[in-house]
Image: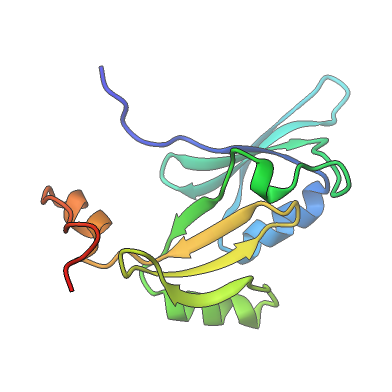
Length: 149
């Protein structure tokens, strides 16, 4: 037996409709939902790709009761794209606001940052072939860090 992949992160959300609308702009849509006996939502699964999902639970904390970002163990969700500049432009056209629109990360992978309606930080990243992630994915050792000058 072995771990095969990441299945899903799970979030408690304050406003399910706003959260569903936000992720739909990212191209991530509801796959299925489970309901309680009274018909209320128990949880909703959003499908990212294949068997990768985001799980949403109603009743998340409101903005006034959430822990500040610097004290949470959760840091961010990273979603991959094959063309970051085009994806940022597409999302901006849909009215998505970015915390940081475009920059190079530590391994020179382009990244942009935004937050969902509950304040969860999301990194959009394009993995480049020569990056640590790109090289590791094809079975090569990552380049040394810090990189030689």
